[in-house]
Length: 162
Image (cartoon, rainbow, N blue to C red; front, side, top):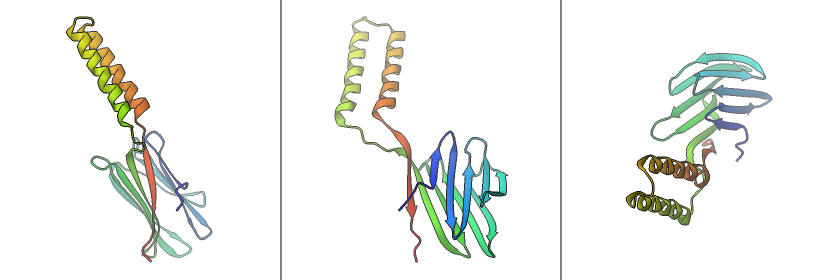
């Protein structure tokens, strides 16, 4: 299984490249602008702007009726599926999932908890003010999100059932 043909980024959008015989099909879509482009062998076939959670692009290659489907589930599951079908046969399909891609050890979670206990103790003993408490708690949360969790896209190729 190879997934180097699909790249996903919240800032740069989703890029997918499919190979069908001697033809190269390229798809790009942006979540921010809603713009989608579809190229076959470097030639622009379709350009659209849509904020829908699914899109279907139909085109012909060497007399074959092809269809590229993009389905995004942004709210609950944060997943996307990009699939290419030609003449009713699934050629390639990729599933993208956004979430935590690295597990965090329990002792890193304990460090954050101990830092909050220390902040609470300093606040209750009048060592720091409410404003300092809020600022320091924000710094602890930001540092723990940046260093102890790593979010990203997991891309899996889905094999056709033939």
